[in-house]
Image 1 (cartoon, rainbow, N blue to C red):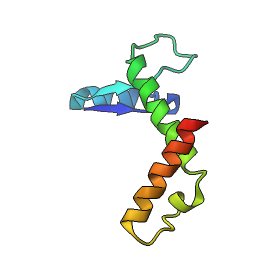
Image 2 (image 1 turned 180 degrees about the vertical axis):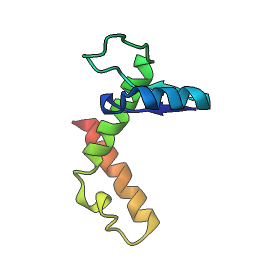
Image 3 (image 1 turned 90 degrees about the horizontal axis):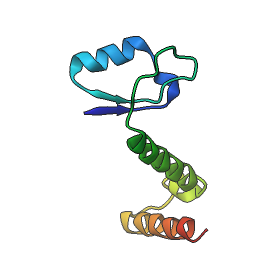
Length: 88
């Protein structure tokens, strides 16, 4: 497994704990680190895109608050919101 996080989680104790558990860390290093550890930049870009997508979905109040009563209409609104976001 892997932990995908932002620069706020770049701490030695966390990286050591993940290494001890056999997990990889996809955390970009802070700019003031003396030794810049390597990370998977492509996986981090993918995480950033997904996070931004959910931020755009939250603009649609009905989806963010689960306003719809049925699963079918909730799914339809997700699809409509995704189409509107893609059309922008």
